[in-house]
Image (cartoon, rainbow over the protein chains, first blue to last red):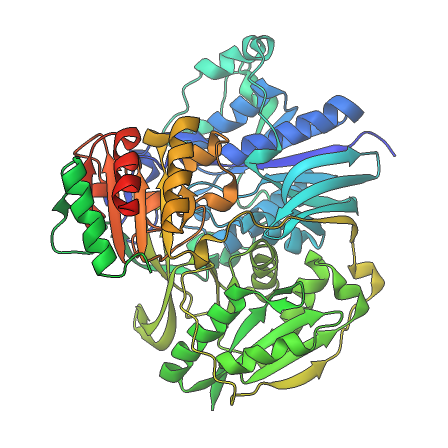
Length: 292
Length: 333
């Protein structure tokens, strides 16, 4: 068996720390233009595991993302960290996809990439926290999956042994190839981008990605993104138009509400930070049998 | 009779998982509105007596697939078998716990059946939904936090059947068991070939939970403002004095001061104690999602503007190191 072919699925996600209901569109999907974006954290852990496998056994790492043209940023970041090839699948027709439509689109692209032994995915993305796309890609490719990985115990040219975390403890699981693996944040500390690789690809870094979809086909011959980042449309991966985007998404957002937590009680009682104040509080709770 | 609601039953250590009892209970509430039955599906190599409580909670029929190869969880066989049961019995709703197992197989099942799946629901309702000219009555409204807990989304999937959801552990209330109610166990074949068993389980390491916050009546929880060994010591002392358990917000767990079993919140455990004492917890939405239903909340924080005070019944502005000893002293009288 030759060197391993590894695919890593990544996603550019809104940084979910400062989000308001304003960022949601009428149809309930996300207005990503309004939000700062980052490399989905657990996808970095997935990439790191791929890089570790490559460090040990050699092979080729292809990162793939589905998203708007701007999502090329996470692919570049992955190249800086050591990925060999990057694929962006981008098309207006993908817009509004739920996990089923997303996994179908990624499956089509992965089949176009062709050979793969291991697919590493982050366990979940911080915008939806669903953890569904990985397993759904595995099902669509009809391959094995091992989820919630906290460590790669051993990898050889034809199998991988993993430690997964469950509610009841840990399991050591071995699988042959091909296999899809979802990686948690506990698995590793992702390496930083290498300065050398950033220098190598710095022309790409400085390249502004145009807003308009059509202009993202990068035309200049010296443009290095052309060499390293492949862009595919829905047609070029042979995706069935009724299985992608909003049309291919059985789940619909009916309603979105900004979370406003309301007080349990009419008014909060201010307790002075004194022995008397706290003593009175404890007495009150004792009298009401709150302590049991 | 309308198509049933199917619950994927998890069990471990000869016991049905709490989340499965919660889901059966919730399913009975939905079933009343839908005028349908509640069924379960269980995969096992030897489950028997431990399944009878399912009846007490309202599971009317239990599809039981028994095979010695099912002694350990494995994605492909489990999801194939559940898909098979769904195809055979055509439930209108399928519920899974949002556990490691549920979150592993539910997406595979939904993918195989090409139906919608909503992850980590915290609330389920029955309602109607209109798409263009068409109105779907009696559809499952799947309510879940999204965007790091900043929004709550209601998701529907009326055009695909069944509606599927994973539901967070601890959020649905268990029915009072009625031992007169029985479940009818229906044996189902295990139509799998050995080539479906693609994962080899080399070892299983059981870890006993260090704390069971779900059962705790009193929780004293540590947050970023009490994220030092000294504060943790005081918090443990207060918990011990009150006969409670120690909880934590995520930064404290991330800092390694308490393990993940102690974590309350959206990525941790949902709790409903009689009393929750939030020590140095600012009140990030992700944390409050896991404790806002406590009967009483005492918030201790240096910052009088901390959001935690908005949901607290009692607020003490002050340093945890200073307040806790006073509480211990007052309690001991």
